[in-house]
Image (cartoon, rainbow, N blue to C red; front, side):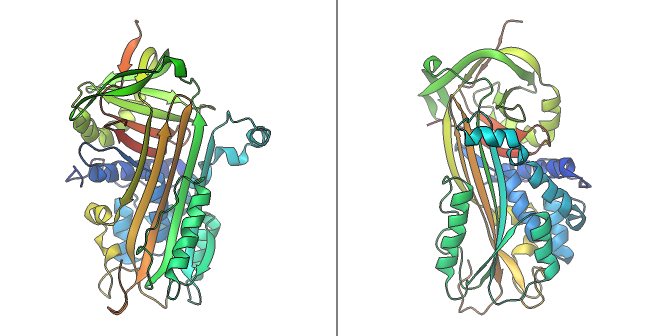
Length: 408
């Protein structure tokens, strides 16, 4: 798994003092993670925002070199000072939450406004002591609610409760974030983040204009439904790729589609995107675009521990006295990260896009081996593999990042 052997983005850490800087760090982390998660000739979807949020919450209890490694992987020059900025980024990613007019319209049955929700929750082993300052950061800055469960005697019941919360937060799109065996008797903390987005396109495709075309996959051309329209969009053509920005209703959230010039150019585009993303966005200008785009649905489960280890934070996953230092969580137990799991759902069609992601950071305790450890219109015909990015244009945060190799 993974096509990158070195960081695909600028390794210089970012001094994170506000939501925009947090978004920039989150994006760099996301592009690095994407480079390692990509499997050749397969669709992929992940949420940089959700993964970074869950790890940042875990880092609130990290100390020493464990914290330093997590900071470097998240492209931050110091996570302790950046916690409030990361938390502010999550709060800012809820435009509907403070828009009373949009809320009233939705209650009245109107659905033209985008829905974007971000939620955090932490589950802890009941009857154990946790540092008050750690829980205070999660409660006051991340607005993470606290659940107390019994991992020791009822791990399956705890897993069901966590999965139930994720199901509710993702409107039923992610129902089993934690599989059997992800939560065991040695689990002590599970930190979760959920992101849900649903919106109509600002300029929807007419369903009657959708026709079957040939989509050139890595193993040959195959029939695929292709949505079509000719409209004005922000567009750029440079570095052997084309970009088109498709705004959602309200104009705050948009999708960037990155189409390589060559049918086999996806690998090349992926190698460039981490370092070129900001420059590519700056090149976008309004053009009339003859647009083809296939509808697609992607579901993906990613076990991130090995990827994060390889990205430069191995200590966090190492139990024992010479391993992880999460002493900021508890002065009673020694914790380490036993698993980082993300699930993502993306459905994009003529009407708009629905996307959901959830990430869990599972904290285990080092125990005895008796416990198991777990001019003319430009032509943009997306008839071959392409990338897509769903971003918040206000903060710059990449909410979802993926590729379509086979639209199905």
